[in-house]
Image 1: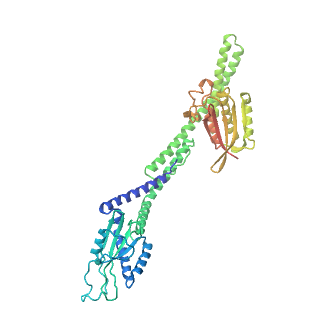
Image 2: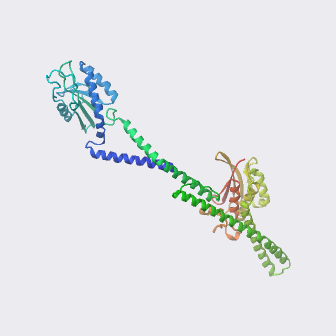
Image 3: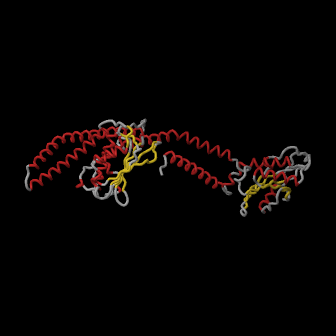
Length: 478
């Protein structure tokens, strides 16, 4: 499965942030004896003290039943358990939580008398000092619960001395309640960190991915034989130099291939005339030969014919880029029928199944040459091994365009899997099943590939089971 570069970068960024958060958490855990959850307790102090102030304001002149009902409403809001204890440790409101001994000691210690707020000891109009809002945190192991208490003085009547109470908050996790955790700063912090990272890295990453994608496309075009490519990679860094190098390489390959093609065309053209004279001379020599000389002349004639076929293949190969293609709708059944008749295929046990309604977009001359070469290969290598079939069918769509697949199957020995792509290279000859004594110079399928690509299609080879080779030609449906 292909994973795009942007996806890999996103995954790397997410892992990077997760590792940073993990390291921060480990550091904070190392600084806290109670663990990571206790870290949230520090910013929660003011919220818990505010809850204590709310209880202090709303609970005077209320019965214990009314106070329990009010605590129940607060419990629903904050998703915690609340209980109110008097300075003696007696439960005054809320459920009986059976506080552990450590919590009871903290309640009694926190409920110790505080200094009077006025000099005459009678008026308590001012609120308690912040230090009088002392808090405690106790972690119970079994069951796992956190007990948080805050001093909460409650007046029984105006002008009287407040009675010391402790509001106790119980929760299985300090992260489970909004009373302890306000996620907004954390979300904001992570978002800002992510935003700053993206702002800093996005231009560089975008340049990298765009440049790599442009060079990937250019390399693919060069590999397909299209050397006139544009590599839009600017700059004076390594990426710019690499793009310029690819452009220079493309130009040099184009010049090399074009020079080689012209050379082959010139050689083949120059060989045509002397080969024609040699063929004429061997024909005349055969007529005037007697005895053993007749067989010698015939062998010479076969060699000359082989050389003529080689020169013909060279000319066909070099003609592949000789002119611009004229793409037009081509009736596939009609073209295949003409090629079969041209190659005298019926005597070799051909069967053809091509729907007369199938029409492809192609250059008729190039397509006819390609199909003819495939048929000649099938006749040459597998005509006596079994039937040769031609069939065509619609093969789905590519880039929202319908395709037609033309398949030519033989029953010959096939090819080793590693050679199925190599057979389309010029002058390639298989070493095993399709031996040299059968003729050919390794240009037949190279010509097929060149002609089909000129028509805007593609061609592949695959082995049939148990024996045989199938050449599949894909073309756009008209």
